Amino acid sequence: RSGSKKEKRGKNDLKPNSNAPLPSEKNKKSKRTGKKQNSSILKVLSMALQVREKWTLAGLTTSLILRSLISIFMAQHLGKTLGYFCDRKWGDVVSSVNQFAAVSVFAAMVNASLKTFADMFEHNLREVLTRKAHSLYLNDKQYYRVNWLDNVEQVDQLICEDISKWAAATSEVYTQSLKPLIDMVLFSYQLKRKMGLEGPYLLYAWFAIAASLSTVVLPRFGKLAAIEQTLEGRFRERHARIKKNAEMVAFTRGEKPEKALLDKAFNTIRDHQLSVLPRKFFSDSVQQYLTKYFATVVGFSLTVRPVLMDYNGMGSATAGEIAAFFVSSRSTLEGLANAVLALFELQKRVGTLSGLSYRVENLFKSLKMPLPLLEDQIKQASDNGNPAKRIVNENSGLLRFSNVDVHEPNGRKLLSNLNVTIEQGMRVIITGDNGCGKSSLFRVICGLWPIVSGTVEHPPANELFFLSQTNFVPVGTLREVLVYPRVLKQSKELDDHLWKILEWSHMLEDSLDPQSADGKSKRLAVRGLKRGATMDDQLDWNRALSPGQQQRFAFARLFFSANPFPSATSGKTRIAVIDEATNGIAPNIEADLYERCHKLGLSVFSISHKVELKSLHDYELHYHANKEGSWDWIPLR
Image (tube, rainbow, N blue to C red; front, top):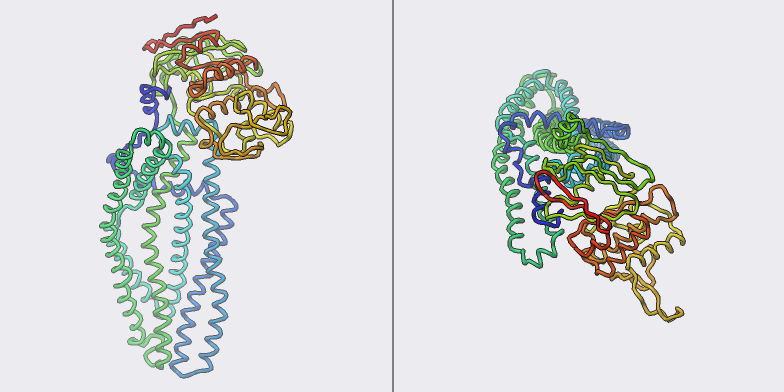
């Protein structure tokens, strides 16, 4: 159990290794990582694109096309206006300015719709993937598998942050890729009309040369982004660890080593980011010069060429016509150059998107296809004629183990050939040395660990109730906390029943009340609740309740589950597993809670080192904690 140092070490063997190697450290797989990341973009996108997202994408595409057409119109219109100005055609100048003002209203609406559709596309993608992740994560106890058994790092960050960043990157990549492509087609056509085929051909030839040179110096942004996200997740885990263990850190004065761990995690991120900066600086310098500044020299040469070579009669044009030609051609060339430059910059964005897609795809793979557990042991048992079998008995309360072997997920044998039958109402205490896996039997019953061999008969999962030594208080109102995990409608009868449950669990205390017959009344003993508290009150229960109160709250949920309202035979708890869940409760209250379990007809399994608890049980199941997995069944009455 996690209460002992030995078993903590055993559990940590099953948990993800926060110091696991980064993708860049796996040299044998580094060549294949890039291809996998690029294919991940399409795989994740296919999961996220539903009918609504496709309609949003259509609106975004329409807005992009309209904006490109408006850009071409603006470039031509600006050239005409300047030509009128140079030729002193003042009436045409005024008319042109008014026309520009009218079109600019439509242009503003198109730009706003483009931003709206882009944001909507991002939010819709995130919603689809997040809801899918939640459905898989909370289905069939996958949250336990990926966090405790499978080697999946930072699941919370993958769902909360990486999916969000992936959606934003996808929307940005689509917007920044489609618009340049549209601009290239439209501006190339305009350039051909003004300069002939030589104009766009010469410009594209230069961009092809620039692209070849830029590819050589371009870093692998997808790989770098995946590494950075992994490091960010580990840094976040360090902070979450301090938040979870703040009290013990304070008691042990562990601020100095904890600060060293935080600084080390942050320094790893900083070192990675600083190591990337020189490569980005060199890459950006080369790209900026080739695709922007020297491209301007090429564009200026192409603009002068029609006038010098008298193309389309430009050699004999007036000063106003030449000025209009220069301005419109320059705007067209600038738009085309910006489109190509955007495609160069797109390589970085696609690299980042591929890294995020790789992580998100692996998340869904882990949720959909968990790693198999104990395959060899299960196959060997089946070959030996003792296959694993689970029988669920409705409304029986019977728990039977027939020739059952129990193994940890790492393969260590805990119990061998267990043959025990527990009838409804029996009380069993499980004992053994620290680290012998006393709670492992119930992980098998609950389906967290697989059955290796033998037959396990038990009631349905909703008729089993587990009280762990780790205090857990749900979020919600007092009513929602007590009926958890049920969701029930509010009623006076239900609330009266819950107040009785709280009294059974010793959560009420006497309070002065002049209006009552004896001058006293019962009130909930929780700091932060005022007199006259109702079932609708809501607090941060983890802070409001002391550890002992949290354990008694857990018993209150158990009592309600065993004696629900409205009363029902189906789904009523019949077996309670109490795993070191009374350490913070006074002995007299502890005995009364166990007696209440007996009155409710519950079968009780207790895991405890308290010798005095044996008097409250009928049998003892003792683990010997040896390689053979031997055990003893000892009557106590």
